[in-house]
Length: 75
Image (cartoon, rainbow, N blue to C red; front, side, top):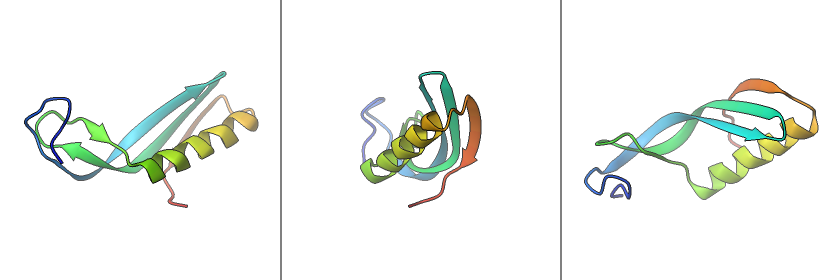
């Protein structure tokens, strides 16, 4: 897909780290599958992956986690 940020680059499959913060919880998830722009490096995570990330963040916040670093695991 064409990058919507730089308007020039094409994206390719890659991995990224995502940091989510909510109500005193900071969760870093590494090795998240994403489309990454070859030109500017902008990262795009699809809807299913985003849903899984948000569910994981809700669980962490509910458990009282303040700071945690995890590896991505598909549902």
